Amino acid sequence: MKHIRQSGLSLVELMIALALSALLIAGVIQIFNSNKTAFRVQDAFARVQENGRITSEVVSREIRSAAYLGCAKGLSFTNNVDVSKFSLTAVKQALAFDGGNMVEAFNDVSNTTGTDLANYGLVVGTASGNIVSGTDVLILRGAGPCEGGKVVSYNSGGGGTAQFKIEDATACGLSQNDIVLVTNCQNSEMFAISNNPLSGGTKDTIAHADNVNNSSKLSGNYSDDDSYLMKYRENIFYIGVGASGRNALFQMQFSGQKVETFELAEGVDDLQVLMGEDSDEDGTVNRYLEPGTTGLDNEKVVSVKTSFTLSSENSVDQGAGNQVVQTSLQSITTVRNRVK
Image (cartoon, rainbow, N blue to C red):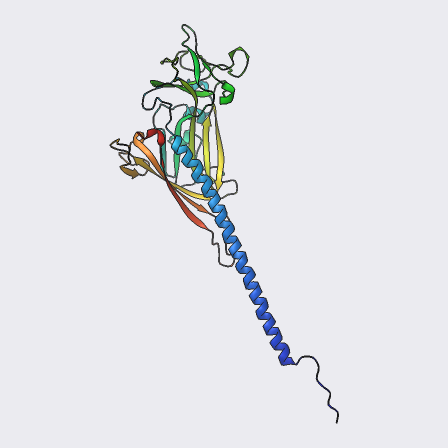
């Protein structure tokens, strides 16, 4: 009897081959998913770190430069601006500056009614740009840089209008009605420019007329070589509802004659502020207090401790719920213009 040799695979061999193939495929899928998760984690960390870098850099820079009034630090200050000549409520609030309270904060804001924040047009809510309830708000005031702002001549005006001649109004970006500070080592005064300093016969000339100021005169003499013109600036940092619906860090800035608001960094969930008070004025911080604490003197704040909470936009593990990358970023920044 002739035997025919079996060709191909038996059922058992086929089942073993399929099982081994399934194990290999499962391993490949597992490696792919692990790599995908690792990529999500790395990407989320990178985005959080980038937003943290922007947040820390911008806020720290403004804290360091706050409370600057030229070399007239701690000396006489006069606000000559006629606030009634400006229509926007937020601008009016910025122009109420009296030379003090240059580092200010509001703790765990839940309602802005009756506060300066309301005058800036800021409210707590869920609409885009609104303050997120329970977060802090930081306000920084002072003079900003003005290239070409050195005073080269000064005319007190006699019976007319006080005028300055500066090196270059164009380089400083000055326009009519801009709010500026003139300072020497005795006085610092804020006023609105009443002329167009960029062209014509009055180019580089800064006039101080009473059509936008309380008087056409200034109280100080700015003919000295150490007199400078600078722009007045205010910066307000707060956590608001971003354009995407997520929490974000916002900056509201007054400069020149207008108020602008920017969304600086998405994914910034919280801001908490502590004020470093030099209570005995020896140049070092004695205590850190929450804004609004009884006994806190804002004029003696020489450093600010900020704590930001940041999170990623998407979950890093789609199979395990909404697991986002979250981190806390803390820094202590010196208010350089208050350190002796």
